[in-house]
Length: 315
Image (cartoon, rainbow, N blue to C red; front, side, top):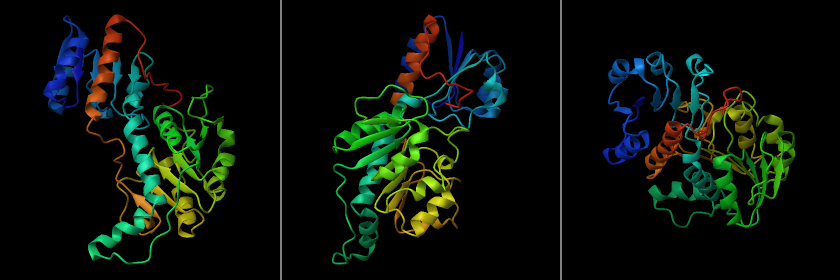
């Protein structure tokens, strides 16, 4: 069995991949695109960020593991082949994306977007921005996968009432008070003090948070998206923010990335922006490699893999 590792894995983590593969496997750590072109023809397994160009060099691959959690950018014709297993890194991002989501919510509620611009001007005595106590909030979490589960767990530390909205999950996690189908999303958003998006981008979720649902939110509510930009009708979100029909938004993702310089989001005072940074962490690479190693050991043993992508559903 030949295994290609396409990401530049630190030397100290490479041994764990070799061990998981077993003595009979040929593990090749790729250092460049040229290496993939030379090594890909007879590869059985590929681990790394997947592009359509990469797939052209993997004609006989049987299993592809992408470190990305979302696969909306990876469902190329070659990977839609039912003979190719596709797994993702979804289990590796939950803690840090949940932390980032809550950091945005806390920053909005505590007025950091009003305080931080004062620092360059050394302005201590300017009027105080409004600050809000999030203890006991009603929180709507859209999507109850790995990220949503971690968000719900953190919410309980703030004694929040958690409403989870998920299209496919039927078992209610311990940290969730209400589990609703997608049909209940508008009602959940109307009741919530904060809405946090944690679902994948699929054909069904594209534009899921539309003008009607945003209009249902309380004027005191916050909206945070650390999932995928196109899940939200961005023009409608800009409108409710500009008209202060919601209190504010924290956005790590946008409809177009990088965010164009002429986007109104840059200038709205009730918006906090980060550049698709929520998944970053000092533990990120270690978690990704750990997941791949667990799956690799399962693959060698012929056991079911974790995080198998339902290509028909897009996640």
